[in-house]
Structures are given as structure tokens and as C-alpha cells.
Image (cartoon, rainbow, N blue to C red; front, side, top):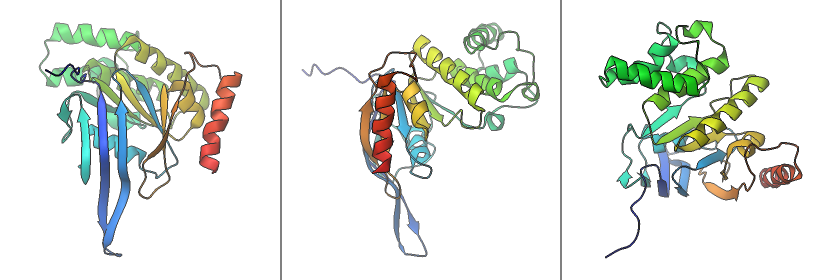
Length: 260
């Protein structure tokens, strides 16, 4: 009898993953990502770091089940990914495109619960919990047009969390925010992650952001035919100190990787 533990529902295993398409003008296959291998532990905060156009968002979409792979395998827990699922949720950069402008904050947060026919009293309890978790208590009756960019991202995050996914897939979620709001949201996300048992895969092209948030950082090579060329462990306690010698040393090591 095998003593190997069953995979957790929030673990991700990727093996020899390819995504390509036929380039008609050249009559040949064009690989966006090629031979990607990765194991993300349950409850881990893993960052995908790389330049624009290197396939980070494509890899996230493959994990989400939004696009089909060419070959290889993506597994979440003990199941192969072949479509979107309630165990995974995506947080996008542009919160406006994912919120319903005619619904209030509470109604936006409860939307998925309503679709699942969760009773009204239970919906209220769940939305209260996550609205408070993301720091929007007192704003429940406001509409998206009345909110700042950072507040809209909090609504998007609360709605995602209210459906209790095991995995959060975050595609440069703070990229459109100003520097001060972005730093605030980074701190809030770190707190929320530590208060829940979610696995997070976070896409960014910002080394500082990667080091502030990630337990491990996977470096995506420049495209085409990108893969994860190196993984850095970040052995720094939260919250991270940008001015510490250890932070500075890691930043320079990763920057040197891209300068090669």
C-alpha cells in the first residue's frame, strides 16, 4: 500500500506544458511557452516574474482553464485542468471590467452566491465577512462609480473570496493603480493571504513587488518559447523591509538575472 499523501485541493502541478499556435505566414508552429514544469504547494504565495510578452498571462490562463494546452499537463489537486472551475478564481488588473456598474458593493460581492442560489441570510453573512476582510465595511451601498481604483480592486477580491476558491490567480492586479495605492493593496493582499488558506499565483513584471509578496519567485524567460528558467526562494519574514540589506541583495540578484 502506498503511503504517499493525496494531493491537496490547492496544490498545482505542471509538467512539460506547451502552448503553441500555427503561424500562417511562416507555415510553422510558434511556441508561446514550452516545456514548463512547476509544483506550487498548497497555501503558497508564488510569483511569476518576467518582462511583458513572455507568456506569464498565458500560463495563468492555462492554469485557470481559460485556454487549452498544446501538450503537457496541468493538475490542481488530483484533477487535470481542462476547463475553468470553482476551485480557481482570477483577479484581473482592470477591476472595472469585472464589476457590474449597476450593482452596489454588496450586490457585486454576492453576485456569484446569488447565481448558486445561496439563501439571502447566508449570502448576507458571507458578504459581510469578506467586505470587512478587504476593508470596505461602511461602503456596502456604494456603486463602482463612487469608488477609487484601489477600492474597486478590493470589491473584486471580496467577490472572488466569497465563492471560496482554493486558488487565486492574480494577473498584475495592481498594475493600473498609483504607487501609494499599489503599496497599500500589496500590504492588504499579504494580510488577506495570511488570514486565509489560499494558494496564490501572482503575475508581475516588477521585481520589488515580487519580493514584497512572494515566498518563491519563478523567473519567466523572454519569449518566444518561454519557460520558468529559475526559481528563487525568498527567506524574508513578512512584512518585508524594502530598506534591509537582505532585500537589497535579493533584488540585485534577480535584476542581474535579467541583465544577463
